[in-house]
Image 1 (cartoon, one colour):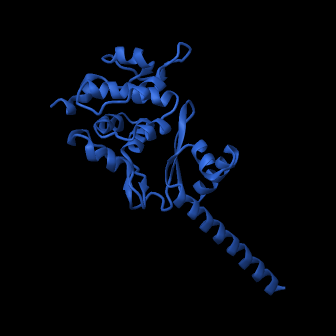
Image 2 (cartoon, helix red, strand yellow; image 1 turned 60 degrees about the vertical axis):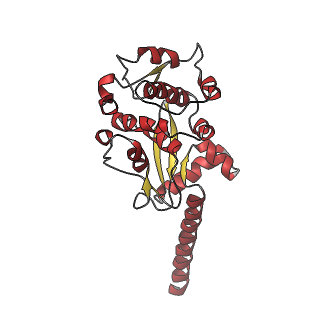
Image 3 (tube, one colour; image 1 turned 135 degrees about the vertical axis):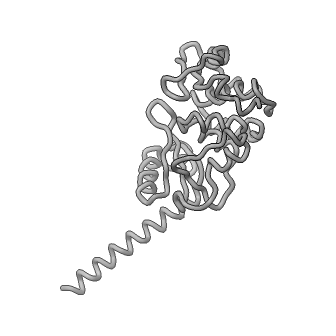
Length: 228
């Protein structure tokens, strides 16, 4: 009787171990910044199945969720969780003025690949952190993969990217944003104003806010590190 129970327990342990190994391999293949739709396409599964996969990976510590509610939800996937590796804040701080650099309470690490400037920009905008957004404005001087940024920033988020680009351009030289990117982000009459950070808007960038129908949580005084 005990032999049967021991074999059964061993069998369950093996199943659990193999399931974790399988999820680890999946996390390695999907490492980086994704939406549920991205994962659905990459894995050739339905969006419902993609969300179930995300849930299982999160339980193993491979996924961190960013956004949600009225904001687009992103999933940061890493096979090694939050320790070691390179973080999104590492990339943001790499280009930010010294006085604008961010010291996050919690940091998310990516292993085995380089985080793109485009991913770091989206991360900052979705962070709900004014300091991260201010620091990330410097990334507009180094954005080169506009097609990738277009894929990562859809809907309201793309308008937010354009609005912050205009803010950055008002205080520094930046790389030229392709007209096609701007055209694809143009707001429609029926679109409501998007908030980068809930209930926060600008006193100094009203023209940009109206152009993109985006409430900008920044004023000129917040950008002093860029104009020293």
